Image (cartoon, rainbow, N blue to C red; front, side, top):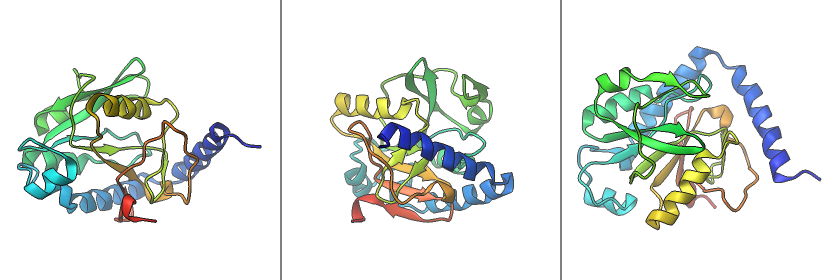
Amino acid sequence: MSTPLSTKKALRREIAAKLCGLSKNAIHLQSQRLCARLATASWLQATDHVTESQAKMIGSTESSLHIGSYMAMPVEANLASLHMALLTSGCVLHLPRCEGRKLHWGSVKNVTELQSLTPRGRYGICEPKTAMEHVPLDIVLVPGVAFTIKGARLGHGAGYYDSWLNDYLARHGSLPLLVGVALAEQLVAQLPQEPHDVRMDYVVTGDGKLYDCKAIK
């Protein structure tokens, strides 16, 4: 009988095989559609000022949105165009930096600083030069290997996001608005879930669809 761990490993191999078959152009086109859809999401509108309805949705008490995102690996949806739009519209962008087995966050203040980031670490991803472990965020755009429309997520297996999300919940008593970001090939019917797994509030996919996970039965 398969265990959740063995099933997850098999799923990672299956998704990796699908993604390896995608061309750079296909990933770029999906990334553009995905960014365009995110840009129209109600909780990302008017990012230079949090409206009353936004504040209620994300639990924000500040006038600017603090958004956690990520720098893409070659076979992930690339959010570069969205990052540029967010920075020029006045939001505060935070990007992850791996410190040991912990996920820290560093703020990026402008487009010039974003473009100056250089690759580092085991994954060779561009990361902020400095970062802090405990950073309050309003919205987090979360990468992963696979997602379901009900918000289940399968990560790469290192546990960076699972650990950070559970630590964040313990420290703050609530989580940011979580948005899973996936290429179309990363959307699956179901995923094995364990007690430490945290579900997404929304999932956006490379075909331009945005799923409200809590509204799906």
